[in-house]
Image (cartoon, helix red, strand yellow):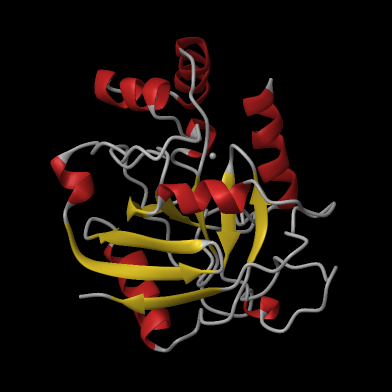
Length: 228
């Protein structure tokens, strides 16, 4: 029921913008982990290193462009849900006053076409693009989320397989059962990177006190820079 409740929460907001272990997320496949770019996300709760997948080049290149322009610096993680995800990248969050509703910023920017890949699942620690309710499921040009998630049962995975019509591999099932994630989002939001270090920082951010709109009561700012 918790997973279904989270999925309902995602759908009704229209814009997506979750186990507490510090263990690194295992790879899904060689294809999903091919990368040439890394970024460092510095937050008021610690530092996260993320590698961007080469198998989602439109999202990779757009993200790198924004990072190189310092677009994300001083923005907030404006929406966090424990055992689900942490979301940021809304340009309206810079200098936002306490209690201000956030999450709609960037809607005037060109959307990024979806780059779905069955090998790129929403395991704990992946980076993915938020979006609104557009039928093409094209991504927001700037808003993103990082999955915290929770461990998933075989019964829950069976449900997601049946409802979406594609099977998980035994490796993917083991990842969801032992590491965790948010399988309800698979093939609905584009995954385009994964955390290499700093999973504990995601847990810290996901665990903070929030208001009725899931905005942290104390601002969590970010700075993102390219490492290579």
